[in-house]
Length: 505
Image (tube, rainbow, N blue to C red; front, side, top):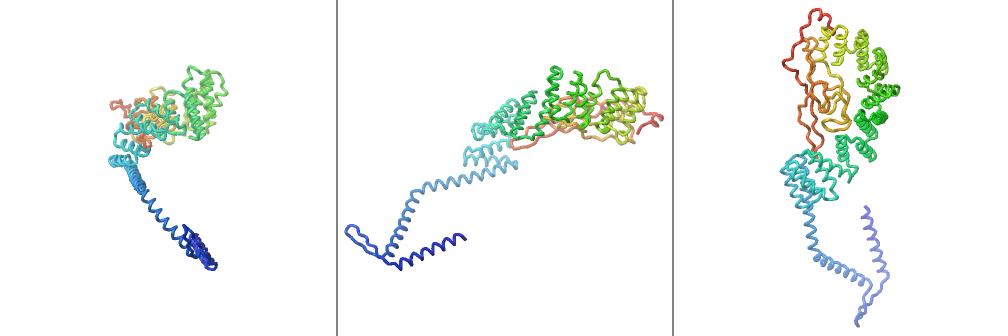
């Protein structure tokens, strides 16, 4: 639209100029070397215009001939570049689709056409990785690490290759160098933090977490939680040798994450040792309100070593009121009442937990009550122990498929910080129906976990997770499977008719 308007405007100006020249005739005289040439103004202007067009054409031809080699070379380079980019794109697609032959062919074409550019080196490394040629991949990453523009990318590839060959020292060195060159690189910070936690360098790990939070690489709440976990780990390692320092670190952890059970347990235990019972009770009560946990109850009931069984029962009832009679509170009351020889009160506390399928801890607690009241040969005690063998699981510390009796700051499988969660493990095998005969009351063999003794026999059926490739994400997670009971385990004696009539559903 605008171009048409401009053309019409220029045409109008030209017409006006032609009319004006026609209305104002004149002559032009050219004198040169004794010759005098006279012509009208219109002819002179026409001659100047024709001369300008001829000179322009001659100039274009001359410059075109002179610049022809450069133009041919530029066109060749452009075609070569386009072919290289096409090979690069096809190579990336081949890598993504898992075609090693096509990936290597296109990687070679891209390097031949484009040279040693960052993307061609990356494609070459990727093609070598999916082809299983680790040496070629490492060489490509080393070439990238030597270039200042691609150094961090090369270090990333070298880090992955070092993890593949299980060279943790080299992997840590590459991650440390990458974190120094680019402090905002997430993978390097995570690898450095994992290495620091593996070595027990809790102070250095806290500095890493604080730096990541300052750079905005993680949420502030997540950073507070991780700092609390690291402080708890430091307090746990110093509890025996440096109780004062451990107490200070545990209190800081409780302040950062009041719901962190291990921090509250360590703080309560250490405060109780120096007779600061009120503060210890306050910390445990606050954590118990959000997360009832048996370790909290154990510390709370034994704040004073000289308390009687009735005193501990009163404390157990306090915990029950705080948590609105959580099932964990009922177990605590039942234990305290059993120690105080108030067996009726213990059964009353456990009664709501017996309506559905009681868990293994509830069954064992009922067996303990029956044993304390009627002796170890009680038929009811044997029945409850039998039911405990096939009862649903109780909550435990679980991380990446590993069940542990104790909390740990990092996962024994992936090395991830704050991986352990207090939850009910999945039931791999459901227990038999209530109408079937009770299973033999045989003790379950304990299989050691990766970091602690497991409360229930578990094994890992899947192989250890491998380090992900340069473009891969995620790793395998081991699954938990039950360990079968010994085949030659002795069978429990069949209950008598009197015992069957007294069986508690």
